[in-house]
Image 1 (spheres, rainbow, N blue to C red):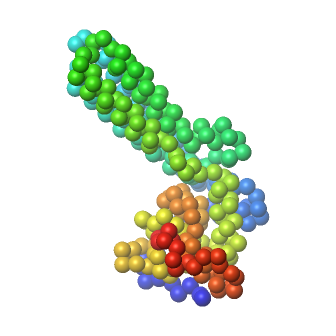
Image 2: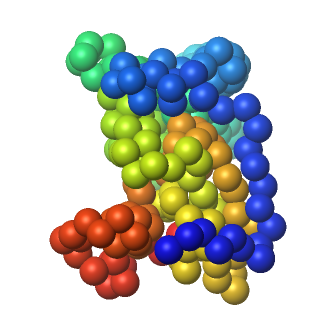
Image 3: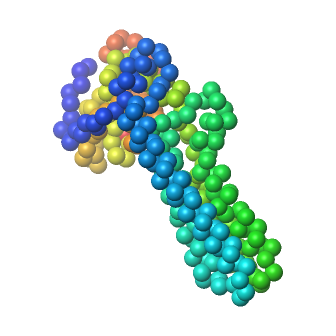
Amino acid sequence: MPDKGTKKKLTKVEGGNAAAAAMAAESKPFVASDESKAKAKKFRIFAILSWIVAIGLEVGAILLLRKVPVQTTWLIALIVADLIFAVIGNLLWKKANRFDPASEKDKLKFFIQNQLGAIIAVIAFLPLVILIFTSKDLKGKQKGLVGAIAVVALLIAGFTGIDFNPPSQEQYAQQIDQVKSLGAEHVYWTKSGTRYHLFQDCQHINTSKTDEIFQGTVPQARELKNITELCKTCEGRWKKDKGMPDEKSPEVEENSKE
């Protein structure tokens, strides 16, 4: 069944990773394009700067904690500001990793690169939390309030720093190979989608709530929207067109939507 096209606005994503796609077609390891590496570098620089500010705010809070009487309002303000910059750094770092992922072959580097945000969160909050609960200048409700806020900030920063589905060069290469093996050069996705599609007229992206469909490469879908899986309906449709057996009926695949 040929692709009938779509009446939705179709936006072609410029740039991309054509060189990486070509290498994947030859079963070579994924290598980020110069453009993707440049974007990753920019995001990492801003992430590191944000983390430096966060740690600086922690130092400021520790110094304030040593002054008697302790100014609770200012201490809480510094903790909140510390959290904001820590989270910003975490999100920027994870975005950079989608543009230039690490290889799973080096386990230590892969772990550190993808979970660095969580490590920074511990550095930016744990010393402060310990000092708050061991401080002799904070009493009763004051210690409980400030300590609770600091612990919550630590948990939030740590959670946003963890990458539960970290990208890897091997994963990117496998995804590109999968799409190439199905004879597709481009994939399609939406702003709120969780899967990329082989056909722009796929029923899951041509809905009343969709006003724009993006066309690009598999790496671009991962870089821009962190979309990691192929639509089962599109895969089943391609196999049906080619007369290949399909293990599951794509129409009942709940996770294919967008």
